[in-house]
Length: 532
Image (cartoon, rainbow, N blue to C red; front, top):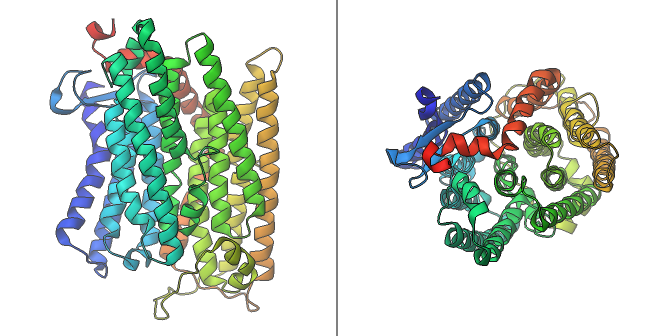
């Protein structure tokens, strides 16, 4: 992989260059060429991310692109590590970002200032968080993506949006403070912040320092759980996501997955292969939080009458499902979870965008959801009367209903689509891992099945309200091509993941095997003399 190591930094450099480009040119919201250049940056990022994943998929299972910044030796210098897990998350982020960017270019980018530089800065922070190999730079990229997300959460203005964004900012500032404390405690006991070096150093921590190290990990875990949207630290998420501008909310769908990624990475590197009370305690805590998060998200989805509010609670359901997979600590379950994180992220992003399109073409929905708006305090966006609308797409109502149906099937986990395949893979692996299914296996099975039922009921009810009750008498709907095509693209990818489930599952299985072999990660990142 030596010749391809430089590709690991490109998913960070491309959005950084895009942000700088927009800052140099200034605010030119009405310039269609500037909009086109921003979309070109998004396309380039998807191509580079796809190339990175392809190279890793064709290489050895334990291969990774390691890029030491400034050519400083590891573990003393900053290092980027693009393994299969990081490449998968970067490609998912890049695809979702491109879809949100194309959607925003229709009209949302002009609702406020500096949308494009903030958007690219957020993507840069997300990719950096997935690619970094040390905790301090994980903190740095966290702060970068959060700083950009603060501005994007406020994009478009409005009292409810500002109020929700203020809550979001305060909560994440507290999480960042906890993150920094946890990092300091870990460094004081291990003498390093490189994640591979931490995994090497933990077995050698002196007994007197072990309690301090575990306290640091616990504080760091709380910060990750806040960012992952875990119960009971989730209370900022539904209001923030449902109040944000639709393309912003769509990109926010991947932000909670950063918390999941950090938990999965550190858990498998440091604790998963150990024995003792620490492992059992960590598994039990993650398992309880996972079940509670699924339960809360499912009930919230069932009570939601607004589609954006429903999508926000579906993100909580996905967060709980992923926490359960981490707690189960099995390569087979992790395989299904990796499949699920891609599918759930793309489908949730499509659902946020779809809600905005439906609000435009079916204005009667606003009357039907009046109770929801009064209860939750959401504000309807005031659309410009002179907005240019593309020509009518034939059978537009059918197209919208098909998009909604695909999103519903994926999020509820019904066959034959990828949501079902991912959950079936997790449950099948859980039952196959033991001769006799444990109580944890039955709890996980019950949580997934009941949550799927709740989500299905919620989606069907919303579908009836939208497409049966609110449909115009003439059935004539007018859609912007720039808004409907990103939704179709995201949902098509969800369908293709089901069609090509075999090759996809092979990739996820090999990724899970590498994740659950922490020594392989250590050997790839650290020089031989340090690793030994």
